[in-house]
Amino acid sequence: MSLRFFLGTASFQSSDAFSALDAYFDAGGRDIDTARVYGKSEEVIGAWMTERGNAGEVRLLTKGAHPDNDTWASRLSASEVRSDARESLDLLGVDRVDGYLLHRDDPSRPVEDIAETLTALVVDGIAARIGVSNWGAARVAALVEALGRIDGPPLTWVSNYFGLAAASGTPEWAGVETARSELFALAHELDFTLLAWSPQSSGYFAGRDDAGGGAFDSAENRRRREILERIAREHSVSSVAVLARWLVTTDSRLVPVLGSTRPAHLAELVAATTSESLDAAVASLEAELGAATRDPGAWTESLAAR
View 1 (cartoon, rainbow, N blue to C red):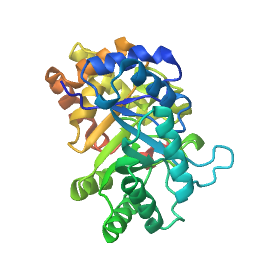
View 2 (view 1 turned 120 degrees about the vertical axis):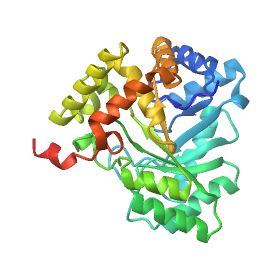
View 3 (view 1 turned 135 degrees about the vertical axis):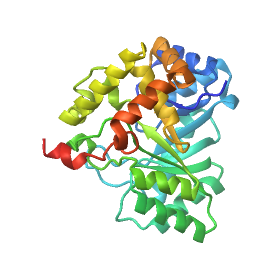
């Protein structure tokens, strides 16, 4: 059975995560999301694949060129991208990754430069496919055009925030991008996949009001959570299950990145994402929340006023 979500591994920092990786793999999951900026995540995944001997069966997607954590200076030069990519390959213990994404945009850097850098990763055999993370729709469209002008590879992935909760714009979220309705339209038009990071809104719908550094705790998001919880009760299922099923059915171009270090929680996510019996609850959720289920930031202006 193939699973329609990537396993998120930002919290995988030791061999204790092997049991979660095993649970995902044994359930049929093969797509693993990581990044050079995720601490020891790549190293842990590499050690797990070596121990299990399954590197050839796993599809790895990693990200690099994250801005400097101290100065927030951009790191999108060709040399910086290549250095991060090579380090990722070494830590993962592979010769090539299935997908390589640039972690943040720098609007001051011409898309032509970025297109050439991404193309070189494919030409040199570092990555089979390319993508970007936290890019707005206009820049994505410009990058696709630039790749076309140089006969570069297609843009396969755009990874932005997408979840039922709208982020409130706290400093922790400065510089990140939400997948809005215009990006969904572009994904269908230009044939790329939207990878939704933090689609469970950092545990906000599991009751964590401090999720994302408090970025989700607003009157509107509390209302959304109350509706989700009521619908879950009416259908005798968990809120987590309804949320997970909604995420894998909301749009054919959307693939969520779901993560947990607990095998039991992963089992719940696997069951929910593959269960058509949850579709009635999802339909109720969409009927009540309307635009918010397709564009979490639809009411951003009203959030600021509350």
